[in-house]
Length: 381
Ligand code: SAH
Ligand code: SF4
Image (cartoon, rainbow, N blue to C red; front, side, top):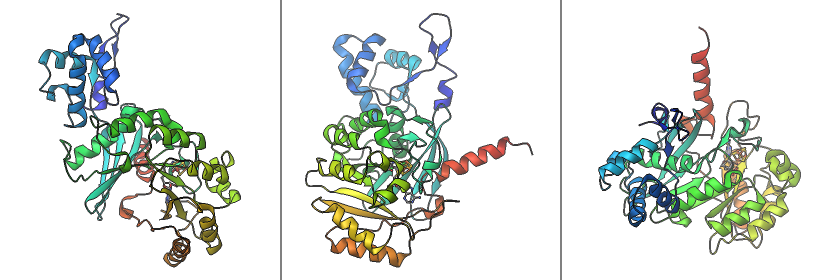
């Protein structure tokens, strides 16, 4: 069943006026809430916890998309759950596969909102780039998502559903014991995850739960443009890998490229990174290479100074152009020279090879292209 069709069916309104309420998704509901919810459905108290565990096993380990598929549940329970709840997915409205194996999907939720999701395969592993919001409120000048207004936060279930859809498409049910094509999660899609912290947190807790999607926290990375107070909370409550979208080493330039810097400047941000409980791991700093804007030798040296004393790695990201962006990507020679200085300063600085260039891989582009198509279809001929 698709998210759209759930609106056609529904359950009788509890006010008893006969109106039908849409069914509620169980994706993102944790063990405790699911146990409580089953008790309301009439499951005996002695069985609720066991049934909740079975349902979660079907959702997160077996990839069930309907209660009908949950064959270890009594059929009466399957029937009563089906009247009120769903475990279905958003619809895939576009699917593109790059010649280099990168896949990109545009997903549409029940309310008609779209987000993008990208799978980047590698030797013996693969990362899924997950979105946290529809649009973004932060308007970083080089980012295509930043040109879209923030429409809404994604719910915990919306976020988890992206991972489930990717595993549907990659054929990874039941959860493989050894190597996985989807082995890593990066919260680097559309939106700022720390501005939707509670939902992202619940989704990642389920992603890390051995009875959920069973990802180790070392295989999850959260990227932020620098919402400083939430960085500390994220470290304490989730302890996932941290990536910081730095992109500039001086406040005047960062104020322009990443406007949230006006609220929490580079010094405040670096202090939060130093306090982050990354253990023996690094904090990753992302640095988009913009021709003539932030890519000089002096800036590379300043970057090394800024990172001093912090176990860190720098990801140099070639700017991914989009129409009317107003920036160009630095030349490969410039990127190499910049990387050399940072490496000599003691920090690994891999250049992130652009992937999926042939499929509009700059975040937000697929969504815009699809909206353009939708608008065109509505225009009179
Ligand atoms: N909002 C979060 C996560 C999503 S953006 C953040 O800003 O960290 C994921 C990464 O892609 C960020 O480092 C972002 O700065 C970078 N990015 C955005 N647009 C880009 C583009 N056109 N080219 C290269 N990197 C880009
Ligand atoms: Fe939002 Fe991140 Fe894009 Fe900035 S770079 S506009 S924070 S998605």
